[in-house]
Amino acid sequence: MELIILGATFFGFLVLGVPVAFAIGLSAICTILYEGLPVAVIFQQMMSGMNIFSFLAIPFFVFSGELMLHGGVADKIVKLAKNLVGHIRGGLGMSNVVACTLFGGVSGSPVADVSAMGAVMIPMMKKEGFDTDYAVNVTTHASLVGALMPTSHNMIIYALAAGGKVSIGALIAAGLLPALVLMVCMLVAAYAVAVKRGYPAGKFPGWAEVFRSFAAALPGLLIVVIILAGILSGVFTATESAAVAVTYTILLTFLIYRTMTLQNFLRAAAKAVKTTGVVLLLIGVSTMFQYLMGLYEVADFAGDLMSKVSTQPWMIFLLINIILFVLGTFMDMAATILICTPIFLPIAMKAGMDPVQFGMLMLINCALGLNTPPVGTTQFVGCAIGGISVGAVMRTILPFYAALIAALMFVTYVPAFSLWLPRLLMGYKG
Image 1 (cartoon, rainbow, N blue to C red):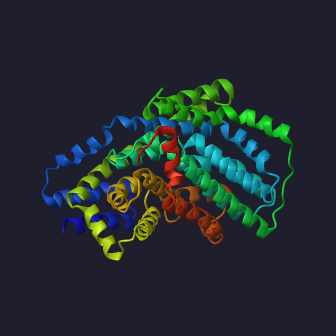
Image 2: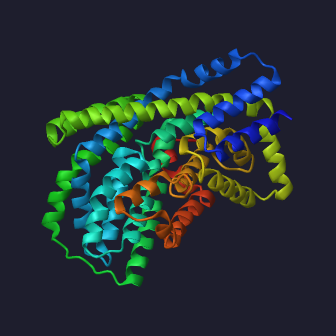
C-alpha cells in the first residue's frame, strides 16, 4: 500500500503541474506520514543527501560553464567550426554540430550549450537561407553532447546516485568516446537532411585561416585537457578539478580573451547560484525518495517484473532504455538520474552491464529527454531563439532522433565505447 501511495502521489502531483522537485518531496512526505515514521526522518535524509564532499564539484562546474557562456568563448569556437567543416554541403549545419560539441566540452551543460550556440548559429543559419526548423533541430540535438563531457555536473550526480559503485574519474574518461559517437551520428543526420533539402556548401577559407581560428579557440578548449590530465596524473581529484576549471575560466575570460565584463560575471554567478540551488534541492528530496524506494525494495520488484518479460540481457537493456526515455520526457535530468539509478543500476549490473557503461546509457537517455516535450528544456530554448513553435520543430525531428538513438544503441550494446578509455588511461578493472 505504501508503494502505491508513493507512486500515485508522485505522478498525481506531476499531472497537476507541480514542479518535479516539489512533487518528489511531497510524495515522500505523504508516504512517510502514512507510514507513521517520525517527521525528523525527512530532514535527516535531506541533509545526508546534500552533505557530501563530492557535491562541491557541482557548483564549480556549473559556475565554470556559466563563465564560458557569458565570457565570449562561443564566438571563437563557432569560427573554428565554420572554418573546419563549413565548406561541406549544408556547411553551417555541420559547423553547428562541431561547434556545439566543442562548446559542450567546455561548458558541460546542454542548456548552456544551446543558449550560447543557438544565439550565434540559429540567426546565422536563417540569414544564409537554412530553414528554421533545421537550424533549431541541429542546435538542440548537438548540444546534448555536453552531458557526456568532463565538465558535466550530471556525471557527479550519477556517481553519487550509484552509491559508490563507480569512480568519477572513470566516468569522465568514459564520456569522451560516446560524445564522439554522438557527434558523428549528428553530423550524418545534419548532412543527410542538408542534401535532401538542397542546402548549399560554403567556401573553404584555407588552412592558414583554420590554424588561426584554432589558435584563438585553443585556450578555451584546453579546459578539457587540463581536467583530464590533472585527474589522470593525480595532481588533483575529480572534485578539485571543478575548482581548477573555475580558476582557469576566470583567468581565460578576464586576462587572455579579455571578453568578460563585471556585469556578465555577476550574471554568471547569479545563474550558477540559482542552478546549484535547484540541483541541491533535487538531491535532497530525491534522497528521501531513494530511502523509501530502498525501504520498499523497489529495485527488487522492478527486477522481478523485468525478468518475467525476458531474461535476455539485450532485452532487459532495451526495456531500461525505453523506460528511461519515457520518464525523461517529463522529468528533469538530475531528478531522473537520482531516482532511476538506484532502481535500474542493480538490474543492469545483474544482466552483465558495467556501472560506468550504464552511466553513459543513463546520461544519453536523460539528454534525449531534454529535447522531448513536455519538459524538453533545450528544445524550448532553441525554439525561443529561432522564433518557431515546438510543433513545427517536432514535425521534422525524426532524422535527428534517429541519430541520437543510434548513438544510444552503440553505447548500450558495445561496451568498448564506454570502457576502453577508462581501462587504457586509468587501468579501470570494471
